[in-house]
Length: 496
Image 1 (cartoon, rainbow, N blue to C red):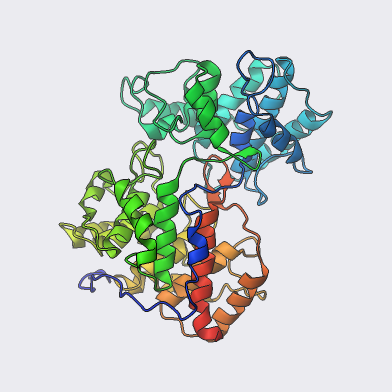
Image 2 (cartoon, helix red, strand yellow):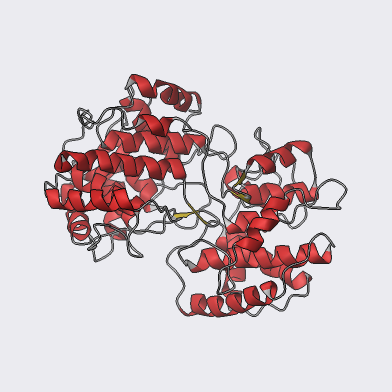
């Protein structure tokens, strides 16, 4: 009999918040403003958008950001070197520098383009020798499109990325006939990679974006300039550069309130009422990253449903039926690879909310997760670079309904604390450490030394590296800050 058969399926207990008064209040001041640091890939697209009349750039700050953020090795991308992020970001930046110079808008610094091209040659060879298990969003679409554009600009790009051309054709061939006339928003999100100079009607949403994507919207605006897309592009800038997605307030609120819940703060708390109301207002038979733009997805739908259910709102997990597949659940239509975290959150929701055929659906999800767990006891996911994100979320979601499944994950997690007190790949980070504290607490770990060491690390380490996977690596600031605050509140029980 599978280990989850006959397990208790019940809501999490609402625990009393720790005595530290209102530790969450400072985090509410800007919750829902879609806070994110700039991403090189999207910034490169905004850096080449001309203003009306074509005499200068619409967003010269994006150009300035791009010039200021080339790495010493010639690349553009996040601090952590993740080859798909660096390749996409560097290609986009090099094309932007050359395109602007050819258009007479701006001149690139001497050597910047050559350094970028040398990096692409080196990094693509490394990628070809050992392709990564994870890719940035639309990598197989965006990179071939950029290579074609580089060729049109007479750039001599030496690379080993030819297999992506075949993957791009295979993906587009899987789509239903006539999809270009009415593409789903999940594909509009990567408009710059497949439109080939032709635009269908109705691609711009109420926010002025194309699928909540600054890069896709920049592409649309260059072909069909309009005041509303220009306004969106200006709003989507952050510290001079561009966000990876915008807006994403539903994602930000749902994830933040879930982190609060891990520390015992119920979404029914009066101080959270405005955010629960906003989340409920954005519910449209499911939840996407925002109330506008991208269609609902399984990941955000599941997490928003759990949060609303905890707050006493009447929601059902039945909406997740639309994402069910032969093996597990999909995040979006037409995706090539399923997401572990989406399936984890589906189990999180259907074990806590009304759902007909709960045990059968859980059996499907847990079988998928058992198959995708690594021999070491952790999971990798398409939406986050670190294994600590899906693994810790699995422990939180499944510790009551499938304890045998997550036991190897708990063991792997407990054995992985660094001497600094941090948890995580790449030497550890505050975000990964926070996830580990939440997961170990959910699993019943009572080793106070683990929490005290983690808490000391979190107090002295303000950096927030970009680990979430979009078209580039990004960091959703409010969500990560909420996770860190939650972990500190949990750890305080062992520190005081």
